[in-house]
Length: 192
Image 1: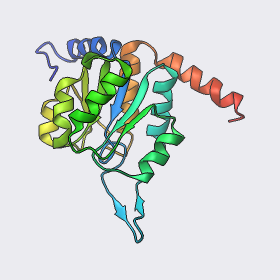
Image 2 (image 1 turned 180 degrees about the vertical axis):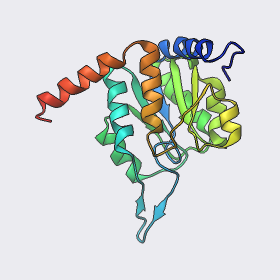
Image 3 (image 1 turned 135 degrees about the horizontal axis):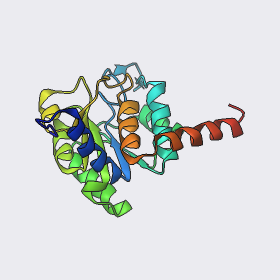
């Protein structure tokens, strides 16, 4: 974890340095994009609740030129639908061995570990959290994941943690205001 005896300023500078290298944000789903709850109904219906703030955060990241990906162990139609709505670049679902999916994403986009930020919350995320350039765990993640992460959000998964992570990255890259203006211009063009 990036901590310093000198306090918060050196920690923030180290996070900003890591953020400047980020070209892709990878997200776990259950416990990160959602609160971790899974509602199962009859006929294979699976419902997930996503937070609107996280959706805007993902749109801000895209406006800043950051690729967005989903890397999750479960396979879900709800995730495919949300990914389509948010124009997410790549989805790796249904792979319990997340490193396998991660490697496929790196290869597809020609990226290096230090160019990836990953937001996770649980034990299966730890191998990825250890590898990426900027590892982020949500506030309600397990302690083991928090210990290997560079940053732990103040917000819980499914309650704005993704937006917080995006804003942290954009601030570090010096692109937050530019992304906001781009988003507002996009909305105005579409009559939003």
